[in-house]
Amino acid sequence: MLSSLGNPRQAAAQILNFGLVLSTAFMMWKGLSIVTDSPSPIVVVLSGSMEPAFQRGDLLFLWNRNWLQDTDVGEVVVYNVKDKEIPIVHRVVRKFGDGPEAKLLTKGDNNGADDTDLYAKGQDYLVRKDIIGSVVGFIPFVGYVTIMLSEHPWLKTVMLGIMGLVVVLQRE
Amino acid sequence: MTSQEKITVYNLADLKNTSDDAIPNYLNSLKFRQTHHLTDVRLALGYSALAIAGACFLWDYKFGFENTKLYTAIAVALYTIINSALTLWIWKVEKGVVYQGVAPSGETISISTSTIKNVPEYHVSVTIQPKDKTAKPETISFKRSFADWFDEAGHFVAAPFQSMLASGVPVVAKLDPKRVVGPTPVSQGYSAEMLDVLSAKDPSYSEVAASGTDVAVKKGGKRRTKA
Image 1 (tube, rainbow over the protein chains, first blue to last red):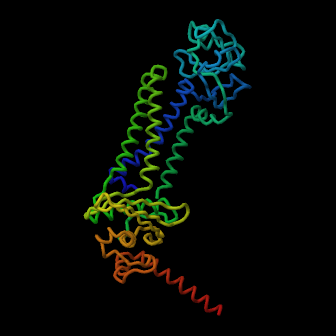
Image 2: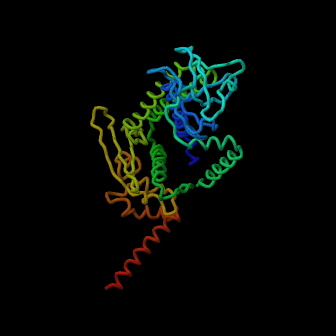
Image 3: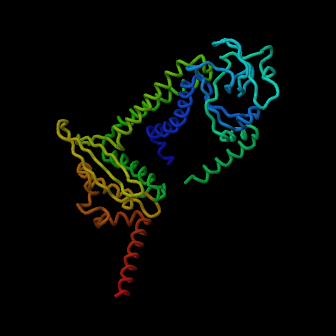
């Protein structure tokens, strides 16, 4: 199979096939981002703070457009906090005002207190643009793999090892 | 005579790809001038799609989603269009064409090949456009068993493969008359000269032939005991 790399057109075609697999996956993700207007339309729940609604490892689908109605009390939203890398999934429990400047307060269903401690220093509430989407659907448990991989980095090594082994063993 | 590489004879994709790769080797050696128009268009489409996705990745990484939303939307639309064009090109225009070229005598030849799932037969369709562009192109289709040019171990054997093309396609026959084996199918009879070529230069192939006669002898034996 490697001999085909001697032919530049064939080599280019093989590299292209590989590249198109990656780029199509990426562009589908970006397309979904554009449609939902969310930078990250699919997220995995990392903590138990929303139990029993969502467990660790649930895969959530987000929608970030207010076509029919504004984000309101009761909705589960994913929001970013300034200077924190990981977005948080919690429920809106209070709302003051209307439109994009409405002040929103969130709380995890399973938490004792609301989220004011989680917000940035001096921040007492969220506004609409802090939110990257409301949860519109979920698949339980399938995101658990990513949690395992990020919590036990040695699993990544094991997985790479197994994949490498498979590649070596499949070589003909 | 055999290639160094060995393929799995039960892998239909391997059989087809190896055979496809052998066509340009053979025809170009007969002084056909290969034209790469189809491949070049496919590569141009594919790589421009790849470039768009790459650029989109870079600006997204550098400037974030919110700042580049409009550009990303345009990129997604463009990528979809180019990718559909590429799919249509492969499906409707290339249609399995593996070789296009111009014979030294001026005919344009276009060869497409295909296989049917789980059937180890090579379907070859050759379209020949005479030198005179207004003339009607002629299409020849035939199918042969892959076993004709792959030995038991999975080595590609060039001579019978070349005979298959030379016997089926007049333009090739004209350029390589010694490979033509007449109207009988390749699998049923080689010229004495051809058998010499096969057995002399390819020990593994003659082994196959030997085991073939073994089977025949055994069959005969069985019939005798029955009678």
